[in-house]
Amino acid sequence: MGVGSGRTSTGDVSLIDAATGIVDYAAVHGLIGWADRVWAANAVLESVWATGPGPSEEWVLAEGPASPAVTPGATAEAPDELLASLAEVAVANGCTADTASGRDRIAMRVMGLLMPKPSEVKARFKGLAEEDGPKAATDWFYRTCCDAGYVRRTAIARNVSWDTQTDWGSLEITINLSKPEKDPREIAAAGKAPAGEKYPACQLCIENEGYPGRAATDAMGAHPARQNLRIIPIRLGGERWGLQYSPYAYFSEHCIAMSAIHRPMHVDRDALTCLLDFVDLLPHYFIGSNADLPVVGGSILSHDHFQGGAHVFPMMRASTAERFSLPGFSDVSGEVLHWPLSVLRLTSSNRNQLLDACDHVIRAWRSWSDESVGVVAHDPDGTPHNTVTPIVRRVDAEGNTGGDAYEAYLALRCNVTSPEHPLGVFHPHEEWHHIKRENIGLIEVMGLAILPPRLVGELGRVEELLLSGASEAQMAADPLAASHASWAAKLAEENPELSADSVHRVVRDGVGLVFSHVLEDAGVFKWDDAGRAAQMRFVASL
Image (cartoon, rainbow, N blue to C red):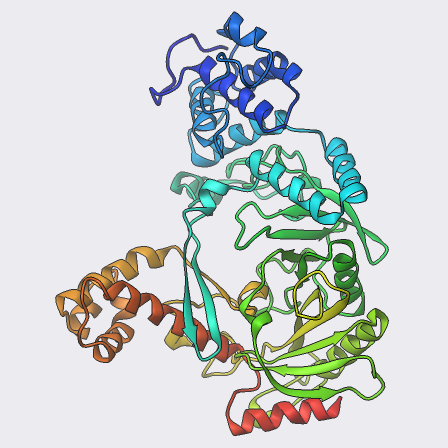
């Protein structure tokens, strides 16, 4: 065991420079104390199966961040280059697999060493919240998660994003490039690995905190490394939950609240109570839940969890189409939002009454059928189809986040299927699948599209073909552009004067308009006369 004093396989940074560099990075960013540096450097060497060489005397004796012996790059925003060098050493020493996930497990192992223990993080968070308020606590916790590499700032920065003006206001479009692609070798290995009982049960379990991760060849299957994960214990609904940030955030301070118990998602009074508890604990954040049924739910229905953060979404800026009151709930005001999905917004400064009103609406919707617009509450065998995507925040008199009034957004969902739409009647229809065919979950309900990475290459090719004047048939014959050919031909027809300066904007605006149609498909009450009448029949029934 052990690597000599030569360069790493990247040829850029020597082993000891990488080890002292990552230690200095951690010290400068407050993840470890200055007096921890020598211990930390030795721990880093051990983590990559190396026993030397050691740091210079000048480095050991450096008394603070201003010392010239401090490694260049210690003040970098992210430690990616240093971690990559250490991972190469680990691969060369045989202590991890020569795969992307193998390198990532080493990087997370190193960063897990160079940050406070969970008890220390919890104590600091609690102290800041008590002394300076909850925003100060989350500011510190989020920054720590970023500095520790758990929130992948460099990867997130690769995402492609823009806004598109539509009939529903400005929608936010993101092509998600932050999550790493799977290594083909690991995919093949996963197919040969024996099945086993999984631990942790899923990636949202609180048992992930500090977990070393595993390769696809493991009997339990692949699982990401989580040594640098820290979870703040919180109480929601009288139970233990955990607060963490999403590694591949889709928006500002994208956080996750997870039940300490691995149990299925559920949208009911208990869930609403938890949402209200959350915004009482962190009033500067919104919080929401994916729906609890397939098709209209999120990607992980097996673990009870919510998503929140500091972002203000397009849906929250939507105008009011209709106002209504709820008999028996005098302190609650109701609105039908002008939004492609069917969303009711209930507002009140009376938390208990708002909870009762939301529970009343959800119960009513679960049993509501209106076959004139395709809404069916249950199959003859009792299989349910109706549920709600709920979002809660606190606002002031101007509608800014963090005030004393509670806002609850209830997006009405229905997961019925039909021969014409076997993937879901209120799901992206087939004509839009070239851009989006996945479920419309919590984040997209609110107007932020999360589109697949394949679109970068495909849309780039579409732009080239549009500029060349290619016909629809020529585009259909192109492997990259084929799925977009009909749509692209319409763009060309609608924009006959395309140029190198305009084609990028035209294609992006076209994608944004497709997303608006996708959201319209997901709306149970359409914005025609029949849909408006049907929605108001439901509202009147409340």
